[in-house]
Image (cartoon, rainbow, N blue to C red; front, side):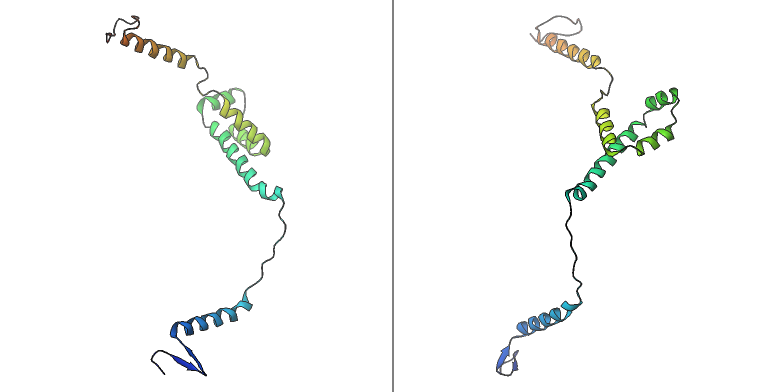
Amino acid sequence: MGVGYLRIGDIMMKPVTRILAWSLAASLSYGGFVQSAQAGVIGAEQLAAPAASAEAQAARDTVLRAFERADLQAALQERGVDMSQARARVDALTDAEALSLAERIDAAPAGGSDILGALLFIFVLLLVTDILGLTKIFPFTRSVR
């Protein structure tokens, strides 16, 4: 009999094999204590409901963030709407209504008018052409040519 071997009958086991056998026997003996899982069929409506409600809550948050603007608060108060009642009405919106309202808020122009952007673009365009020497509109520029 060599060192590190255990003789069980005619079977000789290495220490690693012995540890593996004991751990396997222990894990199988605890197998009876594990509870079985119960599963059921989940419909597509139940699966999509949390995602839809999360999108609707994000839409409600978008609408409520819009109420933080001072100009909107002033306009609502001018029309006799109490801010706490407005927030309560937003919380009472259905998911579809909240999503629709948030889409309309996101689609609305931020500055109210694009005329300022157009004028700024034209000014920069004329300034660049003036500097390149293609036009002579502004007296304060020097041509590169």
